[in-house]
Length: 80
Image (cartoon, rainbow, N blue to C red):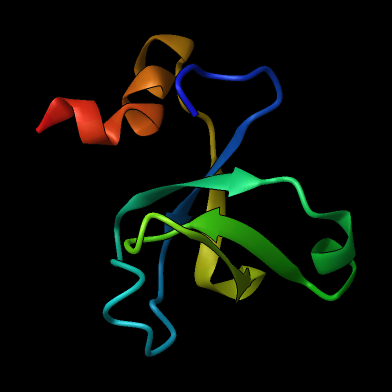
């Protein structure tokens, strides 16, 4: 993902659910659309492995990111 896409959503991790290597509490994650997962109360996020995985929605709270800051979440590899 090189640029912020309209409709992209973000969540704040409030509980890593025991997935210490994959999720960090107090960290913001990009959510990918997945209607099938949503029907079962799961969301698809790009986690610490830089891959997308399903996690229960109770581990996160949705947040709004200003458009000016959203690009940072899609260019993580370019920041270091």
